[in-house]
View 1 (cartoon, rainbow, N blue to C red):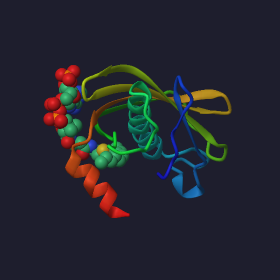
View 2: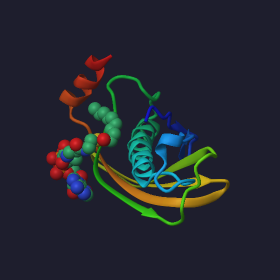
View 3: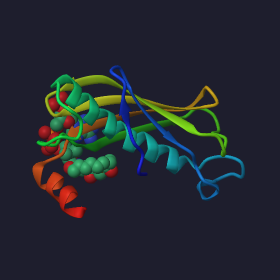
View 4: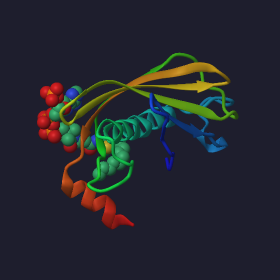
Length: 134
Ligand SMILES: CCCCCCCCCC(=O)SCCNC(=O)CCNC(=O)[C@H](O)C(C)(C)COP(=O)(O)OP(=O)(O)OC[C@H]1O[C@@H](n2cnc3c(N)ncnc32)[C@H](O)[C@@H]1OP(=O)(O)O
């Protein structure tokens, strides 16, 4: 998705403007894309929160990155294609290697999608794979 999840001290925000090829029903955004945005932003929120509680600068080594263990998405209303989407993420629970994030998508100030991500801290060998990709 290449989204940037920005921590504001209380929650994380990301922004994404879908393109015409993200259409399902004409005029509306494909649900799989919306689920991916909840997924990516949920794990990003978990990471940002983990850095915040340990008082560390986000993105610094040793890296705190998270994998999706579980993803739940509710499509509350059709999401119109065209306007920018604002994706919110807030920590519900944080214990050990697990972070539960509630996330939702707003468009024109209205929430159209709501979800929950159970994120688990990624093992070192996966962090290495991510670093070696660049
Ligand atoms: C390198 C990082 C890069 C990040 C890039 C962005 C990622 C974007 C999101 C993704 O696409 S990630 C890819 C899709 N996800 C995966 O491929 C994950 C595949 N699954 C696994 O690798 C393991 O099942 C997983 C690491 C998620 C958990 O295995 P562990 O053996 O490390 O977990 P463990 O059994 O110790 O459980 C840790 C906690 O998580 C909980 N948990 C694990 N799986 C769960 C599940 N499915 N649902 C709910 N909770 C779950 C578990 O109950 C426990 O909670 P408690 O500490 O409270 O007891």
